[in-house]
Image (cartoon, rainbow, N blue to C red; front, side):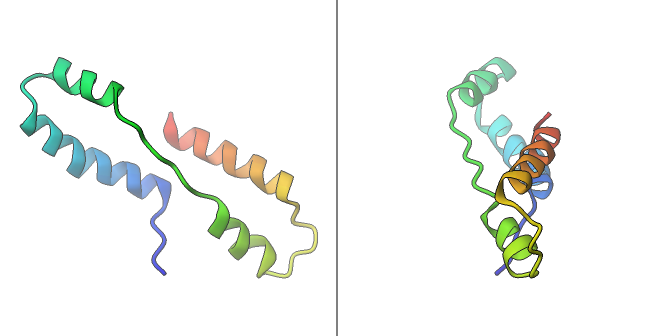
Length: 79
């Protein structure tokens, strides 16, 4: 299975989706209003946890610690 990183997804959004939306809407204020009413779904972490903790045989890898790491990393990406 192909996994696309969050940073790559954000780059794709900036380079492909936003220009397409801009061409379809009449103004930047219309684009802002459209995006403000949009829903963005981020579903991640499951594959990361499975591949980095469960399958690696790392006994010391705890779900709570790994979750904190993911949240920290994703918080940085979304800024």
